[in-house]
Length: 546
View 1: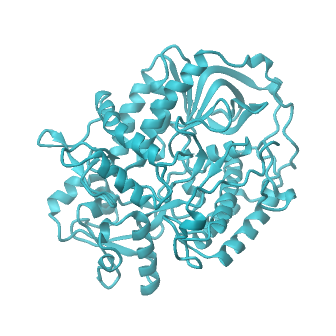
View 2 (view 1 turned 90 degrees about the vertical axis):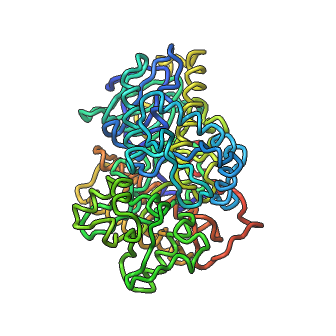
View 3 (view 1 turned 135 degrees about the vertical axis):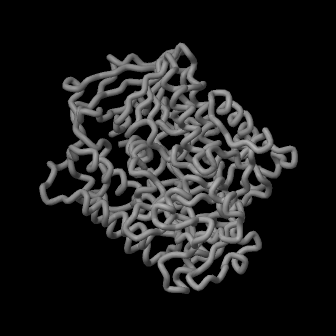
């Protein structure tokens, strides 16, 4: 068994101490944690006879899925083929994609897009047919989009309406996952915090994690505040196998306005022909890759970082001035509106951008059916690592992955739930959590959270180095040594514990992979090492069995 640090710094199995006799209990067949595209698809695919409870950390409208601008990748045009899409995905994945999963998801994608249209998602049309966009890494136009640059919002609108109308699904908004509940190696539900701040044991015959990623581990991120890695961290504490956490995809183009929140500037702008320029107006991408601005995100992000260092400037600029102005405003109304609020006309002015943490490619290890190594627990969407993305996600493949695996898992988990499950009344929950110290008044949760996120941007960003990772690891272990022993009583405290857990694991994995591949770039090991590292990297299982 591999350890990450001194035993005294190991996180506890549970974040809080509980007394089941004093808690409210709720019983269901299938518990879905997460209200994004994967969670909603799983709930909608559950068999009608199964009772489903879908819990969301915030309102169900708040998820990474809802913020997706680009769209869904699928082979729709007769000029395209499944083989083309598979090849593009494998190239982007840099040798770590699982070919059978790639083939499964890409063959299923057109059907899933059709199903979305049937439930009311209004995709953009051109001459009566689906309008197809082109994005970085794709050899053919195959990106289905909606409302120009608000695909996620439109897709989630249709899905959420359908979920609310499903007679067997109950949505519990603003319900926070604290911990998964396990007994004798099986997942039996979850401990959650309700909107009024009370804790509740949610017993489930089958549990589906679809709680999204952990972009908020980094200060510069496209992710909303809910993306603190709660599902991945809870699964790890429960003994779940994880892998490939070194692969965080940084989106190359995030609007950079000092003092404002970071706003995603879609991949589709470069797909439509936008140029990237440095502060002196030089277009640098053609010198980096023959695909220029349409190269994969890892290549574009590193080129931007190198350019910022070379010019000693905090950002680069997107230029659409050579494109048709009316078309630019019509195609990207949301981006146009946000930029206009800062006095920027996207069709005429340079748009300041820099990379930001965007999508966790690694996560909970699943088999081809979405099962984890813990019976009764499934995972879908960004919280999972299915093998589709390898070392670098191809643009607009993520929503499709959530649909395909959510659909499959919803059917399988509900089938198993209806076939039977453990009797909740006989489950011996622990009376109390395993120790922990009382909250300390001098622990500033907000300050520690900010310090952690700053460290991750500075030391565990797009370009990494072993000595810097060592320094980061020592600091994070020190923080974990006292922060993870607290008995937190607030959601902010739970989030800090999860952020620290994920940061520690990401740094460990980044140190271990002594090569550069996909989104993971080591300046001290700048080349790909297929002989030593041409495989998935499992996270050390130092909590398993506790």
